Length: 147
Image (cartoon, rainbow, N blue to C red):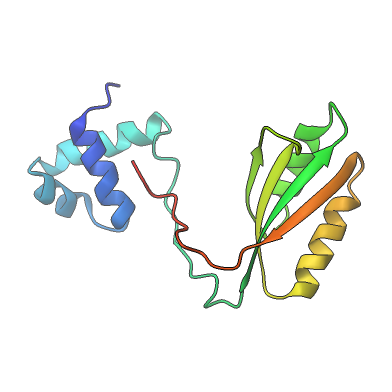
């Protein structure tokens, strides 16, 4: 599949509102509904569109604390540890990183007690050597919807 300007426009519109109908999107981009459905299906098949979801306001749900946690692991165990951490409910993102730490974890928490329990859970995973926790004081931007 060739990714062209029309596909980019489709993605930009879907990032704003993934619930809009193919007909509505086709009208906005001046193509037929059949063409729109076909293009969206191809974007899904190529895994450019991996799914559709809801964006939540975590603070409105009581998750007032965002933590960024650096994790240092025993050599050769990083991927296994990251997979374990990624399964924990509060985790928003897990990244392999360069620098002094091996992994960066971003999580959301309702209170300090739940954050403390989370960090202790990570430290109890075999082959986790150390963690450094950073608390977010102010979120300027938090949105991965871009193209």
